[in-house]
Image 1 (cartoon, rainbow, N blue to C red):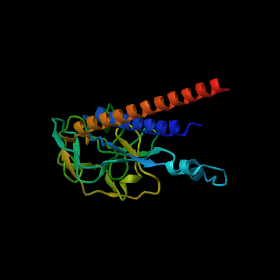
Image 2 (cartoon, one colour):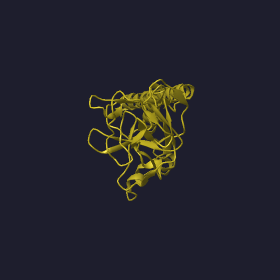
Image 3 (cartoon, rainbow, N blue to C red):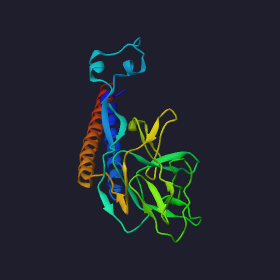
Length: 253
């Protein structure tokens, strides 16, 4: 086994992954409520240590080289995004920590910061981007009266005709790192997580812009691309050296 080739390959694969994540962040730089992923790299132990097979023979030098690198679990940057004013009475942005509760296609509750809302054909309040129902603080779908003006208070209360008809389900989670992305700006909390009413202010006729810094994302893409190129050249170098060794020993034989 060419150990150097495998170590170089691990670095190249990790760089390509980091480039994909940065590219996804950049692609969502205009997506309302999007929160960027942050990647991290960690060193891998040598194969004997990582797989717990220390009884097998090895080489002390190779042990000190380690096993290359691998990606650590991604983290999501949940920092507050800038607010952007809109003309839609149903659009809302959250200012502070918290998430809107919505109902996923599988019937399970999901969390989101994307407050682009509209009414479907049944006058239910739904996400404009996905069409899934927005839930009230009681966990039920919200139905409004078509044609009546809508006012949404900072506490999430939805008022029509001077009467509060529902209240948006705005919740917070004690440890946001437990959330898993489920696409379309949706997050899923584990069953063991505790969801509590959030203190975030609901701002009507606004949406929260993406948390992606486009310039930072482009720099991350360039850095990862250079790392992948360096790794590819190292792989090629190891391959050429191995070819020379094979050809040399073949002639000697």
